Image (cartoon, rainbow, N blue to C red; front, side, top):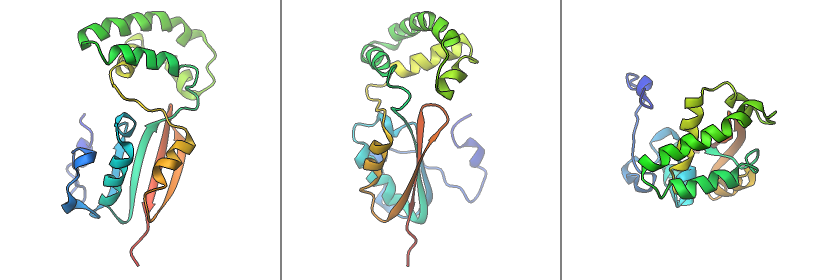
Length: 184
């Protein structure tokens, strides 16, 4: 299912897909909710993207983000980043067999290690193919930031006229919601 496909028939919903850097100034202040899921941490200029998205939020509206978090991933990050350095430079046809090999090597640990976080414990229930796809997906992007809670606070702080809530959610992710102050 395409993202947002379940909302397209709702006359109160407008879905826009566009570059966060090139948001049209005509839509500034017109959205009750701007959502960015799994994208911000892959951008070269996340601060600029946040500023643009924030301008689109109407007074009383929300900017909702889901990003990768560093806590709980500290031990695996060097491995993930090494795989990304390799995978992001290779053709996809070459990255796929590497992901399969890494999955074969990681499979016993995924199944047997008593993981401390829910996300890694839940990996045990996934199929070999799902794990391979997760590893493959982690190998492809050239940029992938893993942020701490304080990093998230720092990213959101320059967005004027709002209040932020940041919470840990499913898997290795932060969800941040910044609500724009209502117009007086």
